[in-house]
Length: 363
Image (cartoon, rainbow, N blue to C red; front, side):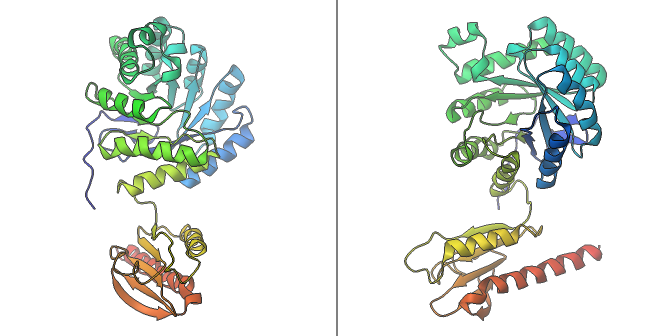
């Protein structure tokens, strides 16, 4: 697989996680619990961390949430980001209470003086700031100048706030330029990436429910990553946040930017299928969740789409008219009954896992 050459950005340290500077792309998500419900929020943070989330963002809409942040930050297995709107005092409190990073939308944080105040305190506490510019909250004068929330408008807004931060000498900065329109978002990030070296947080804001949101997120984020743009991602979905993490992992794995376990490939169904391929693939997908080996696994429905078209697969199964086959890199390993295909695949996976464990022990 060809490797994507990524644009060089400055590294920013967030707790024990590095964004930019050539570090692997970091997966983020955001809790949808009430932050003040510390039990439910901590449970969701743990779920996200277990799913592979590396940074978790929490809404801090009031002082009670900022106070609760202290206990959550102490217990969290991953760095926590405080999401702040409208009240700069909440950002200051969140930093004091252990936020590893704060996200602000400068358009609603209270003006230049508040931004300077935040930057100075963040510098003292070595807390990074994400400048999160959104199409829905651009300054009126910029909207009028550009005739709406265009890519150019997003970039101009971000650059204006960066000028303020840079005047203070603050450099622990991450930038996002999000719109719900995929093309606008892509154009904005492309333009900004040519102007400044700050690491970029990618996402499509307000992407929508699981099905349509996945498509918009994959197109927008995937396009930019394929061009080498982006250092951390959040796939925004109107769904449980663990779904965002699963989607982010799939995007990165599809681009060869990280491997989180087996990658499942399967053929589209057609009249040649001798088995219920949809059901077989679903069962295989569930089974693969228990493995961490970076294998490519194929589940194919007929001889046409068998070892030949899935030659790149480390392991695969394919159904014929009377029997099925198990193959590896295009070579048939053995023949089994159609009703034993999944069991045979599991046996091969177990053998591969055992070989992997033995190699690990022999290091």
